[in-house]
Amino acid sequence: MVARIARQAGYNLGGNLNEAEDALEFYGFFDAWIDPYILAQRQERGLTSWQSARMKEDFYAALARHIPEAERRRQLWGWKAPRSIYLLPFFHGECPHVKFVHLLRDGRDMALSSNQNQLRKHGAAVLEFRERLFHSTRERSILLWQKINIFAADFGESHMGENYLRIRFEDLCGAPGETVRRILAFLGSPIDAEAIARAEVVPPKTLGRWRECSPRVISRLQEKGGTGLRRFGYLE
Image (cartoon, rainbow, N blue to C red; front, side, top):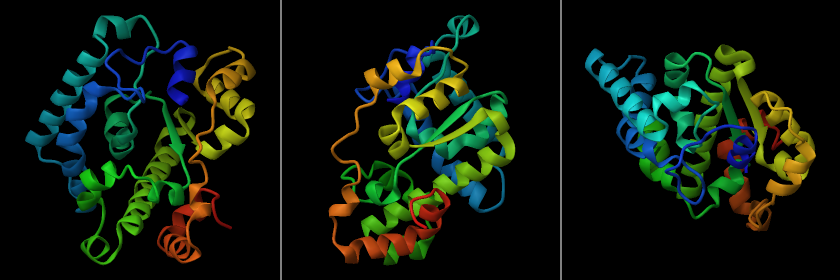
């Protein structure tokens, strides 16, 4: 939904996309560099000079495939790729004026999703050994959600200023006009928010699926992910 809103706001989001409008040209870059980057951050050391140079080379090669430089010079552009959140400081360092829309969904919903690709790909880099060893898949999922979203929120708030926008998926679905208006203002577009909201915002049936789960499971998820759930307004 946010990708379609950005496209209507005049942004070129590339052509090689999947059904979810994810930018496929970045997949290989994310697969190669998210784990080394996160591990270097956790160990309070930077990438080696060779790694840093290679990461930048791979990023700009992916970007050139996504949208050629000549096209980027004459229009608004960007990409939709959920795993960008892991590399937010890198993108900000390379493109200091980059705008980042941080879209959150309730971590309990995310933990109960059948799609756990991010946990499978990056859980070992983000989570501590004991978290990986002693917790269920659902608990590991909400721990990953909590850590990476707090990481992005802290960085966005402290380093990106007006170029950082955080919105909740639940607010987009529950108050579409107001939330779309915030997105369009952030993107610098004067187009009609109400019309875009009516055309693009369709809440999925899975929204709030955590409410149908057993109290015991939800209690465990809220115990493990409580810091993030409270930080982002999902728990009091």
